[in-house]
Image (cartoon, rainbow, N blue to C red; front, side, top):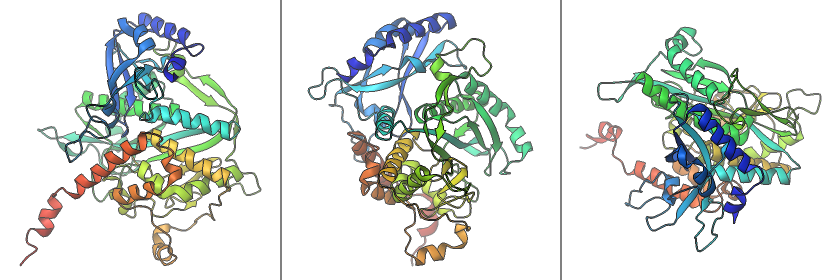
Length: 490
C-alpha cells in the first residue's frame, strides 16, 4: 500500500520524533493538519498535540468532498463526491511542521492524501484528488524522464488590502492607485511589516516589495525555490495575509479585479529548469528555529538550463526554447489553470493594463504572455491572484515535458507593443487566449497534455467545480443586467 510505504519510509520516524521535540520545546498545544483543495483553499483538521504520534502513524480521515471545499453545485449536488463516498486519509509531512507566529500555541503541518486503507479498490493508494500530492509525483516523474532536471519557481503575488464599511463589506482600497509610490507603500507599513515578520518566521525569505497600480495593492516577493516548496510558501503567504487582515480590520483580497479602470492582481510565475544544486537551510536570522529545518530549506546552485548557450545573451538555450515552445502550444489550456475564476477574465479583457492577449513570448516585453524576465528565467503572465499554484506548476511541467520531448519551436520573440498590433494578429488568424472561463475550460478539455496535470479523479472534480461556477455566473441576474435591460422595450 502506498500509505504504508509512505509512513514507513526511511528516516521518517526520526522526523516524527524531532517534531515532538519541537512541540515540547516551543510549548505548542494544538496542530492544524492541512491540505489544499482543488481551488487552492486550505482545508483539514485540528488536534491537540497529545495525539501527534497517532496522527503521524494513522493520519486523519475526512470526506472526499473536502478537496472540492465541500460545496454544492447549482443542482444541489455535492461537487465531485456525494455523501456516500469513502473518506480520504491525510498523513502529515513532519518536515513541514511550523509554529504559527500569531498564536504560538498552535502549529501547522502539510499532509499528503491517500485513499482509505479499507477501500475495496486501490486501498491505501495515493489519492489523485490531492493537487499538492499530484504535483510532487508529476515533478518526480519529470525528473526521471529528463535526467534529473527539476523545476524551480518564484511567484509575484499581487493582492489588495481593502477597507471595510460598517457592515464589514468592502469600502475601497486602503491606499491610492499610485504604482511604486513610497508614500502609498508607507501608508500600509504596519500591514506589510507584520506580514513580513510572520512570513520570515514561517520560512519565507522576503526579498522585496512595493505598492502596485491599484488601490491598496501590494506585492511582496520571496526567494525562488523548488516548485513544491514555493507553492507551499504561496499558500502560507495567503494564510498570513488573512490573519494580518483580521488584526487590522481590513480585507485581504485575492480576487483578481475588484475595481474597474485600474490594474488587476496578477501572480506572475517565474520558472527555470535546473540540474544539480544543494538544499541549504536559511535560518533568516533566527537562533532557534520555530519549525523543522525543511520549512527554511532552499535549493541553491546547480546548472540553470534556461541560460543562453549562444552569443545572443538574451536568447534562452535550447532546453529553454523547447520549454517555451511547449508553453506556447498549450497556453490556452494553461490559462484555465492560471486564470481559474470568472473574475479572472475581467483582467484579460481589460486591455492596456499589461495583461496577455495572445500566445506569444518576448524579452523585456510586458505585453507578451511569457517574457524572458532575466537571463535563465521565464515569467508566465497568464496567472492571477486566484490561482492554485500546485495546478499551475503541474500544468507548466506537462507543457515543458511536451516541448522538450518534441523539440517544439516557440517561434520568434515579439518585440512590439502587442496592444498596437492586435489587428495584425487577428488578420493572421492567431487564436486569442481565452476571454472567458467557459472558453478556457473548453481549451483545457481539448488538451490531453495539460489534462495530464490533473490525473485520475482530479480532472473530473476540477471540471465539475469550474463548469458549475461558469453556469452559476451565466444564470445570475446582476446589477449590470438591471441597468442595461430594465427599459430595453418598448
